[in-house]
Amino acid sequence: MLIFLDIDGVMVPSKSWERPELLTDGFPAFSAKATTILKSLISEDTTVLLTTSHKSRFTFQQWKRIFASRGIQLQTLKVLENNTRNLSRKDEILQWFTLNVISEDFLIIDDDKSLNALPIYLKSNLILTKPMIGLVDNDLEVYRSVQSRGLLAV
Image (cartoon, rainbow, N blue to C red; front, side, top):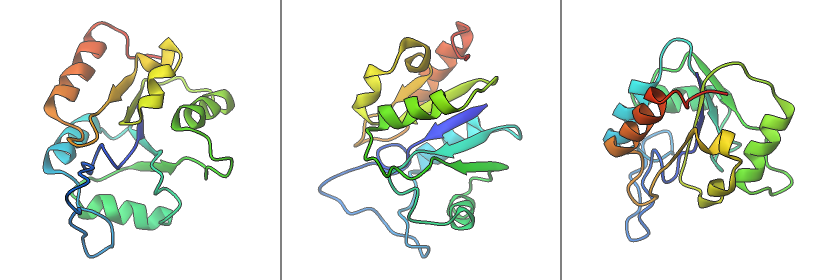
């Protein structure tokens, strides 16, 4: 499976009144709930593709260490190309699908409301989180519901 993963509003709740706890690597701690849920989605054949706006802030190896230090072991981690054209998240993902052909199931996990305008074949694989809460159990239920209906496919 391929997981398009945002960080802010997904792994790190975005609470304007509260500064997130920074770990020694200089990146915020992930929510314990979000970490548990993401770990439940990841298997040996899962590829995580970072879509976060922080994607170019760290090297590939630093990202691997960031996830590992938060208890998430990733076999395959990729980073969406730098957004030099300042595209919306929706357009970044659409561009990626235009340039890449995949034959595996995929999920898009993000809090960006522009993704509501994705074409249905992409939106049906979207977990749209609430930014101040992040990835929570209810989102996993949505994933399982989509999966059981056979909608989680390319």
